[in-house]
Image (cartoon, helix red, strand yellow):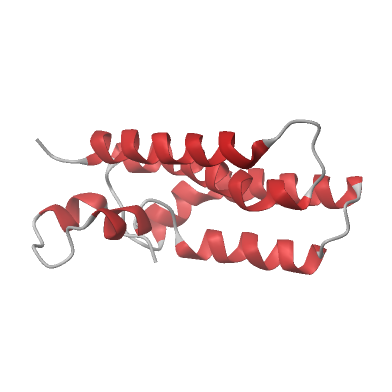
Length: 126
């Protein structure tokens, strides 16, 4: 379950980079996306692409509401960036299932890494 990034700034036991990364988006949202994509299977059909993309957009939209209502997150930057973070993560997970005319094998992971570093800088306290 995600929680407010600012809470771990004062906790010396969980201040690692990985711990912060796990707190950026709700676990419930990532689990739902993985479950939906498991149900869709590996068939490369346009229906599966639309269902995967549609579910990712819907889950990205509701992620700030889950963060605030279920996890109690109040950090505005985390609530605003959670949908973008989730969509970048979801693209990294789902893109390999679908045949694309461009090679995402290096582009999307690079975007994910850069976004995560930028986001961690934006959410850290000075």
